[in-house]
Length: 124
Image (cartoon, rainbow, N blue to C red; front, side, top):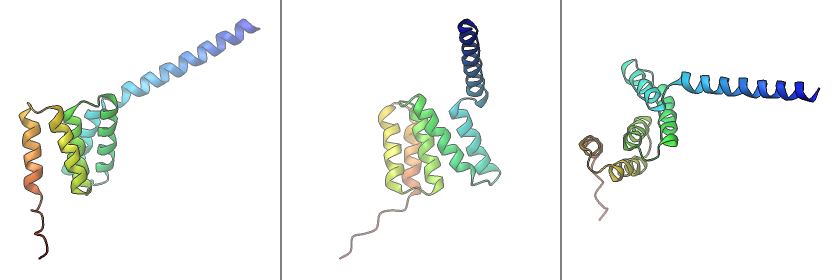
């Protein structure tokens, strides 16, 4: 009886692991999902997809926190969602710090800086 119970438990855990693996592989890479969500949000005018894109970028960063492209993608996604500029600046700074030698990261940061209005002059 014990042997059968162990066999059933092992079979159940094996099926659970197989289902988890199939789910993980079926969803695709988080960065790919994020890029697809950004394309849908921009190309098809679906602003609700910005939230999905941000979550997918966070998933990509959970897998690889040193990925500067994921930090940049998250920064642009958060900017499109209306996040405060200091938060987006911190995300862009993180990407630039991780890959100062990558020209695309520097161009993205420069584009973000250029797209922002200049700071207000201090009151007299």
